[in-house]
Image 1 (tube, rainbow, N blue to C red):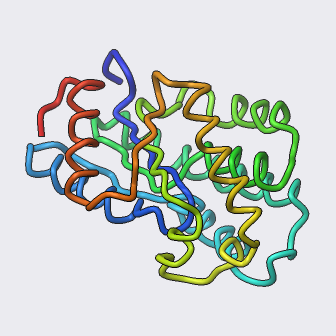
Image 2: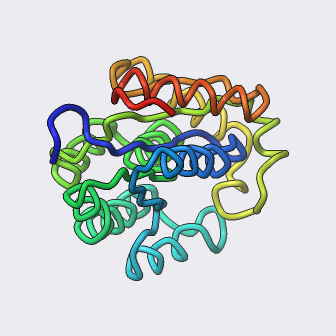
Length: 209
C-alpha cells in the first residue's frame, strides 16, 4: 500500500444523515478523476456479512443483547476486511464505506451503554492497521434525520433518546480523533456538503476533485 493515510474513507452519522448520497457523489468524483473505487457498506460487503446484516437490521428493536449485536457487527467486519477492504486497498483502489467501526462505538457504546474500552479492544483486534484514512461524520438534528430516513428498520425504532445518545457519541468520536474524523453539518444542501468533502480529500490525500 502507498505511504500516508490509507485511501479508505468511511461515512458515519445517524439515520437519515445523507451518507448514501454523499458516498455516491464522492465515488463519482473520484472515478471522473481517473481513480479506481470500491464502494461498500457495513454491516455487509460480503455474502456472509450481508447475511449477518439481515440479522441485525430486521426484527424487533429488542431482538439482541447489546453485547451480541456488537459481536455480530465485528464478525461481519472481519469478513469484510479480509475479503473486500484489504484486497481492494492492496490493489490500489480507494475504498469508500457506508459505516464502519465508529458506528459500533456509537450505536452499541454510546447508544446502548456498552463499555467503550471493550469495544476499542475488539476494534484494535479486528481492524488492526486498517483504520480509515478519513472518516466523514455527517451531523444532523435527530428529529430531522429520523423524518428523512428511507426505511424503518430495527435501529430507527429504538426511540428518540437512543438516537440523541447516538448523535452525541458521534460528536465525541470526532473530538477524540480530530486528525482522522471530520464532523460536517449535514443540514445544508447536498452540493455544499459534497464540496466540503472534496476539500477534505484534497487536504488529506493531495487529490484534487
